[in-house]
Length: 497
Image (cartoon, rainbow, N blue to C red; front, top):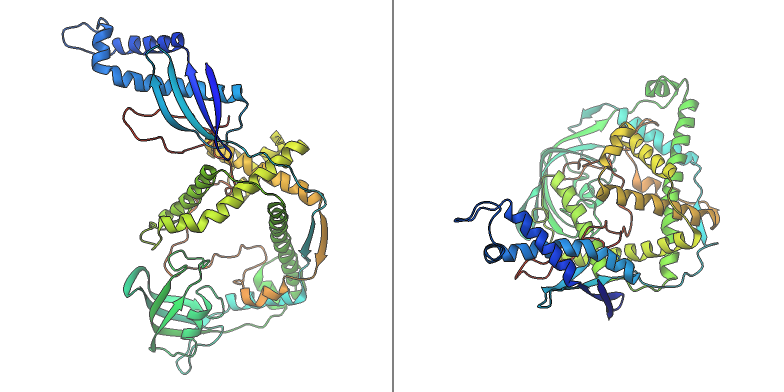
């Protein structure tokens, strides 16, 4: 096998791979022998069909299948021979059986960019104090008080903060009814912010049977993709107004919250511990983001376009999967694929760039995953989904599922290394967003419920897999040969072993 390499652009190489005539001859002969044992041709016994007849009847298919097999069997060897670090599946630009018996194919690949690491140890980051404040505990108690309080209808006043308004609504976009933005007898807790502040303000003050309309501009980052970035006009009718009958927050209230609480002080202590743990977990994520932003800002790396495109496709695919779980499509959600490509371009590029930086740090610092890391990852997923570890492992039996999970675990290990070597300053903060957020009340051991969106069901988890890490490198698959007379092969997956 002869391999020549040419530069074809920034972080892009063109490989011309020539397979020896003897090797090509053997592969073709093997393919024709296999075919002759199975094919039936009129006038010939099975297994006795002359080669020339087979070539005439099946030559194109044999050449295509043999070309695909030879490309699959030699591409990775060509990478090893040239010492190239491909980061995405190759594009097979041409392939041909030559008159001299050789087989030649051209592959264009994106390679890992070369760059020097800037300082990554001793990064300075500020983090919020994770200890829960008395005010945060008080807000949590008030949330629990509201959640456990019975509701009663009111007839003599309008909707006010803390009430539950039961409404019918229909959304319109560009004058057209939005099928996914319609509900009857839909309950909205005023002050929760789950339906958007503007909508809540619109119905505040209205009484039972009142009707109104309101046009609302939803921001691009609104949680519901059906509404995000759209100007929607709502027709609204108030069906019922309910108020909560709040109990006193005392020792009896604490005992009602759980058998493990003998007094209000016990309940407060449990709430404080829970909030502190949540803030600690959130703080770890925020610190990782701050570290990554510093690394992104301090490194100039040109990201291969095809790898960024691959990441964008993954992001869109993830959105499509979530919508499918809600019985929706991009079209029914009012989303445009081309617009999503533009919207995700910057994020995808940063993900890929960040992954390059982290993997370079791992290489320099010899940070690798061991069996214990992977086992702990399985246990974490097991606890998250309340599944036996052996069952979790079955979900990752496929290499294409396991590699992204391992990539996430490695990224976490690298981030931990950066955090352990960072200069961390703890500051007071985080409490200012407490009132605006107003999480739904829950007992200290319970999870915070997901905010209810106006037109979408809660997406079901497809599998107990961890979230895809930023800039995840695509799983390696073998390259496919081009079909005869077909268009160019499109980018699919990675070309690394």
